[in-house]
Amino acid sequence: MNYWTRTPRWMKALFPAFVWEKQDVNPAVYLTFDDGPHPEITPFVLEQLRHHHAHATFFCIGHRVVQYPDIYQQIFIEQHGIGNHTYDHLDGWKVPSHKYVDNVMLAAVHINSHLFRPPYGHITPWLYRKIKQNIPEMQVVMWDVLSGDFDTSLSPQSCLEIVLFKARPGSIIVFHDSEKARPRMEYALPRVLAYFEKKGWEMKALPYQKISH
Figure 1 (cartoon, rainbow, N blue to C red):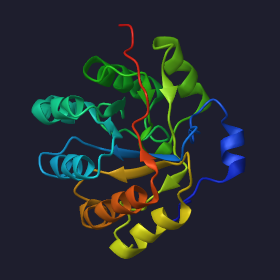
Figure 2 (cartoon, rainbow, N blue to C red):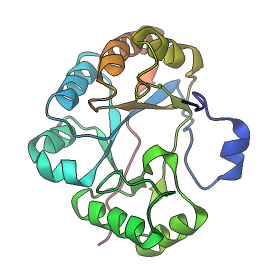
Figure 3 (tube, rainbow, N blue to C red):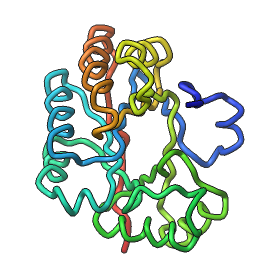
């Protein structure tokens, strides 16, 4: 499995309209979690965040929000951020464009946020324009550091080391609250949170706003 654990500068320069990192006055990192909510894994994540006085952003799949509304509401109650991750976790490089845009719009009915992260990071300029035509406020959020927790060939320790060695102030970091990522995420996350807490870095949610329907 080939992927960049830290997004190269040329990629960020190629798509300057997307959010890749976010600088702050004080050192901070922005933890994000894709593919939830999940009835067991998301509560684990929320518990860990609470324990370390951290906040994060959850890029949710629409049909899972419908399936687990109580867990989705708990994300709000604990003052974390939310974002749209399509309704069915579609790959923007593999499905018809109109189907993809419709899927994003369907998710937006249940996920009222101007933040959007395409599954797998797969999006085309045409898809981006069409999504913006439908939801002008929509902001695509990518990442600076990819933990690799989804990679079943990666050890939990390696997942942890990727984040500790590659994160820097302003990094947007991707984890997953999903079954596939669970063994690596559940090992790495508590240690990542403890590490940044000890360094005195803030762990913040990305600010988001509601969209106009």
